[in-house]
Image (cartoon, helix red, strand yellow):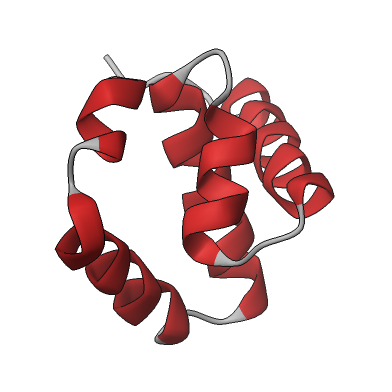
Length: 77
């Protein structure tokens, strides 16, 4: 997923993002926002915060939470 992909989703994409985020609790919104931000790369935090209506600090914290959780997990081979 690229920034252009998100930008090209138009109003329908924004509606879907809003719908999904409205069904999540606070922690889930933070994690999904962080994940989407990582997938988008540079500028992703701003785009996700605008699309999902989240504070950019919340999106950044989601990225931190996910990275910490991945460090703490044992790999399964």
